[in-house]
Length: 391
Image (cartoon, rainbow, N blue to C red):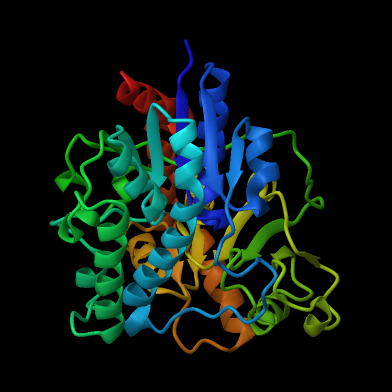
């Protein structure tokens, strides 16, 4: 008999989309999945089988051209404060819904703090999702990259707000316990081999790999050309200068370049593009990667894992601290290279990509992680873990 499983997530595409195949698998098995997130993600989630409980999000829409990444030094504190403010808005709207329709289990994203509080307040079993690198006492991004300042005034603002938030909605949950929950399971959407100090994370952490939804192919490459996909994801992607730089690097070459630029820029800002460059706001990324020789991206976890699942090396151009950690791991594991600092010559970019795709060490590294992805289990294993927590 199916059970009621409640997902709670921030509406960022990089957090919602990794869950779609898991939702689809759970509903296929007869469970009822409800999903608390913004209205903007309703269509994708409904297609996967979830009933969406939409809340009014504080996050800027996908088309807002003013969104910029926080400074490196303040990335962690600003992110925590932003996600806490989102949680305050989400919890106020979602808590009454779930009081009237209690779930059997809450599955919440690492940054969807409202789900964490909802599970604690209702004394429900829970599963925490990690679409980014996992942190514990053995490894954390702030310590590893020397980017955590305990004296940051924004951090103190966050801690004061957190204490008030918990005091109002879940007094039994102490602030010091808030960021170190002990759910029934923790699911990471990448294989253990990609995690820093992966062997130091116990059996409660399940590294299930990317949970990809296979669909009929909707994109076909031109004949007799190597394909390169260029994307900066869906948040900090208002970079017409970067897209133009990539287009110029491969102009008139034997490469076929696919630019996926999102909704935050005016397409006319890119000017006239070379004939071997395709321009799109969005592409079916898995379709393109199925034919690609290389990926140039911001080093988001989703893009890296999709590339690895297709055996495609990555040229990483990180823009945030989180992406910087991913890019360093890409280099450590020989999955690609990081865009050299200060490289502004388009010819240098082309040379970097062509050396990368011919490097046998990178070929071996990508092949190793591709096998790790293939054996991690994906959506079926994630659904198995969630069902185990229901029992």
